[in-house]
Image 1: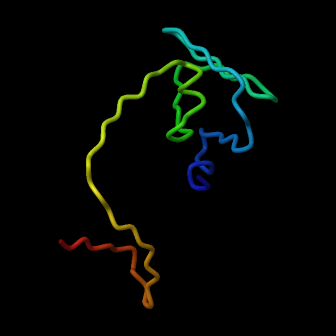
Image 2: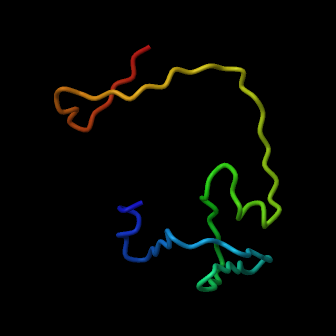
Length: 88
């Protein structure tokens, strides 16, 4: 997020709570507790239980994959030199 926020034409509002969202074919309107935005493109990236998606009534389609996974965090003793290898 820090890298994205440092881009010249991107503004991030991390402490805003969306109160209302509406859109039509030409534009989107987003209202928070502090301000209102209007634009031609709305990117909804607020998580799996997206309040913005719910306010816009955008349906979510999903299905089970019936798979299991093992998830782990690994701390390297040596530098990984920005390279990762996946071995099966």
